[in-house]
Image (tube, rainbow, N blue to C red; front, side, top):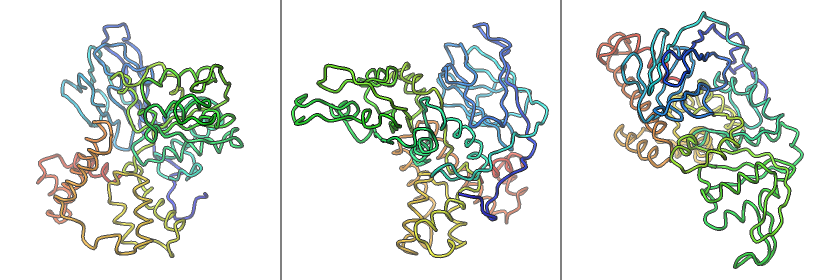
Length: 439
């Protein structure tokens, strides 16, 4: 997909500050360790006790994923990831906010100083607006494309993380198609679609007579994917009893069919996708740590659609054409879609467009439901989504903040100063919050 004249691509990025995080207090001898957060990172930086964190803290009071750091136009965003013992900035408990430099962040028995570095030019962003079937021209997506290109050419295991509907399966297929295994098979195994004793047979196959109903020998997905790529979707739902067998298959490149007495060699690249926080699953004992580290050689976190500034319009026009819509999507529909929070992310947007093309105005109510009904629907949907607590909470809080700001701005006639005063918050913070919610 090439870039059309109407697509906004920031070829000359604005200067953006970098931040250094330095450990200044530690009970385990980590004082002086330093980590720099800058715009060259493809995704948010994690801080915690897990080996997968960009800054790993040797502190028994620190959660595996304790907090996240993400650089954007407003500064360094820090988000507590539902940690056990909390995150404190200059002595104040913090759930989500922005750092400007000079703060002390304390977690457990560890303290870190945050320093703002000299403004630096952001490394050149990819000019891609897609990677295979993954489409997006936002800064958040274009930061990921160089990493995707490198991983496509490698053979390492990859974990693709993200909320439901963010395009994890599409990205896995794109990694396969852009790499040296493109000529081999691409097989998908969904851990939520098979349960009980059948799961082992689906993964590794079975011999004739291995169990009741096994009337013939059957290959599993590992054998079917040999020479190519196996996507294990929703890996966080894999039965704990099967995880040692999966670890053996990934480490040794061999499997044993159910009822079989000999190992079978397989040549498979494994990509695992999950909507769950695997660090929390490991901490809770629901996912083996050794399997996690074997799979998470590389990690990609797909951002939710609400944070992909400008991508709703790009995706809407793409699918409007692809799905058979006539001409351009109506401007009022585009504006409405761009304001939506899209808890179901890219998948929900695509389904909405397909429904509108098929049903026309019948697919879109003339008037939105009352705010109370919409709020209840959102909460119910988020509660049932299976998201980790911190992400579910973030979705609901973001929607509340968005609606509150819309209401207070309407009441003040669009005057930001009056709206901020009526809200009881500083005008600068009001503007920062408003800008973030437009993402």
